[in-house]
Image (cartoon, rainbow, N blue to C red; front, side):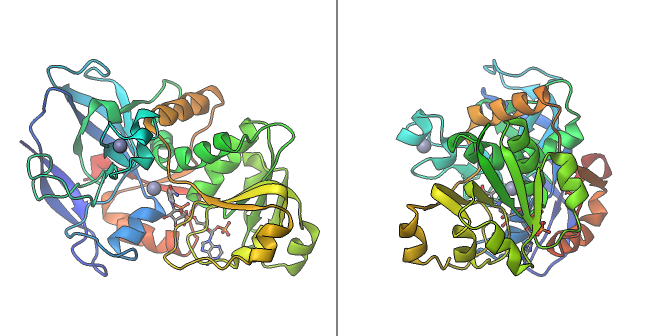
Length: 350
Ligand code: NAP
Ligand code: ZN
Ligand code: ZN
């Protein structure tokens, strides 16, 4: 076993404190990673504050991990010491169910092992549940470690590991590309990367944001149109307009109003995960054969595909690098939508 420095919260209303944690001995297929940067995803906040229930404390969040391989187990073939690598939301899955067999480990039927807050054996993680990337080191089985291509900095790559693939996967699944009108609701951590990726895929991208305060940025990221959802006129102007709408908002929205913005056969995909149910009216869906769906991160091969795509198109996250003692303040700023556009923790400050 090895000891790593980590930042953890001990209660839903607690603040982050430095903690020494154990990482398991390397098994034959394990990779030990020196974490360089860890992004702050809104899911980290939902979990640390126990907004979804079921958080085990002390909790070490972090599933947007970029770093360098420090050591490999005896049978590892995919990565070598010194490689630039990333780890996203999952560190394992059953490998046998129909989803895993299809490369959709994110939809593993018995459930994937998430990077933090999932019950595992003491052998896999001393303490009995996974501890994430707000840490100097992590041990992950090689199949769940992806390669970060040269040409993307580790700092701007880190947020791609969750935010990037969470947007890339539905954009690919619903065939975003030339001739498709795509709207992104919410231009935060997920949303801003979605704008960049959808534009690079050739879609006509519209941002639907609280206000017009980030319009210039949205256009720089590749959006053709930008609307404020605080204006009632927006919902009149854009009625029955989009092929695909991706909702990245972390709070409750009047979803029926947004469903009405879908044209015939259009789909609205839920990515943001507030805890309350959605209120969709049957007439809104039936009227134009509209679909309401959802999507959860992406598979491992798809994560690699996304990183390669981002490297090819020069896409990285827009980030603000912080030190580990600034995590609490960063959380408050994310909740207040005061982030441009992802906080990334420099692990050297742990
Ligand atoms: P974020 O950086 O906080 O961005 C969320 C954006 O939603 C904000 O920038 C803001 O955009 C908008 N927003 C926030 N509060 C709002 C409100 N009260 N009303 C209207 N709009 C509001 O969060 P994130 O890291 O992108 O994560 C977003 C959500 O996705 C979270 O719920 C997270 O748990 C979830 N998530 C899901 C997956 C998945 O696989 N499905 C993966 C990662 C994260 P504007 O200022 O532009 O309006
Ligand atoms: Zn995330
Ligand atoms: Zn499985």
